[in-house]
Image 1 (cartoon, rainbow, N blue to C red):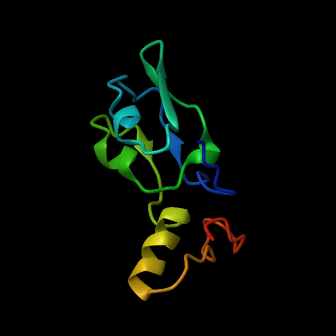
Image 2 (tube, rainbow, N blue to C red):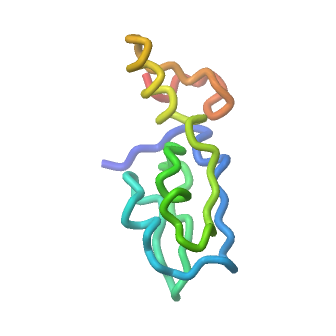
Length: 100
């Protein structure tokens, strides 16, 4: 099953020149956002990105950046902490309700 999160992945950025093609992003991404082709990472499915930040935290070349916590992953975590349903009302989703 492929998930798509409306407006998510907007903060995801890849510096292809800095990428060393190690595949760490592929290994840690829970939604297969990345592939490695010709020795460089590529964003294969931006809409599948839930902006959790795992890729950026694990990239040894610092070729990836993402504002973690602004998308659906953040809404799910905040909902759990508050004991409420996830509510995408932040900048990542614009209140579209993509998580609930």
